Structure formats: C-alpha cells, structure tokens
Amino acid sequence: MSEIISITCIACPNSCTLSGLKGSANITGAACKLGIKFYIDETTNPMRTLCTTVKTAFCDSPTLAVRTDGDIPKGLMKDVITALKDVTVNHPVKRGDIIVGNILSTGVNIISSNDME
Image (tube, rainbow, N blue to C red; front, top):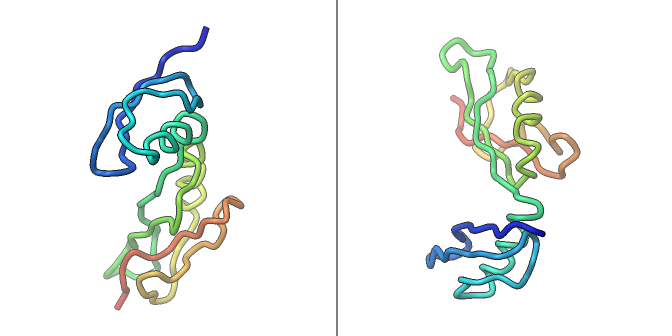
C-alpha cells in the first residue's frame, strides 16, 4: 500500500496543500493545473536551483557568489557542491558568465551571480 504524501505547492501564489499518492495525477487540493504538475514532479523527481560560492584567486574577493542557470535534481545537490570545491576563478567575471559549463552532465551551467571588479 502506498503512502499519502502532502506538500505545499509553490507553482503559483495560491500555496495549495496537495495530497495524493507518490507520482499520481489523482491528487486533492490543487486549485489549478500547475499544482498537479508540481505534485507529480516533486514526488517523482524534485528539482532545485543551487546558490553557493566558489573560491577566487583574488585576496580582496576570496569568494564569488554563483548559482545554477536552471534546476538540477535535488539528489545531485551535494555532488555539485563537492565538484565546486575544486573550482577557483582566476580572472574577473561579470554577472551571468559561465563558471562551470554542464555541471555533472546535467545540461545546467554554474554562472556568476555578481560582477567582479
């Protein structure tokens, strides 16, 4: 027997409480179609945006804020953070510049969140 899962939907401003079986489109509480898709995605393959920092070679700015330019599987978050521990930015970058392309073959890039002077 499958367990009923309840989550709060963040797909729109309604913040509906969705309940149903994992991965099922037969759920309760959705005020719109976005909620059904959100529930299925969140219970089968949750995705997240990652915001973190990487090292730089500059004494006046030893770290650079970075983020993913798309969502990555939630289960890969720790692996991506581990991969970024070995990254050092050694040249000035602008906001949106790619720091690491296609991180862990996800098709998602790690980009700069800030300009460096």
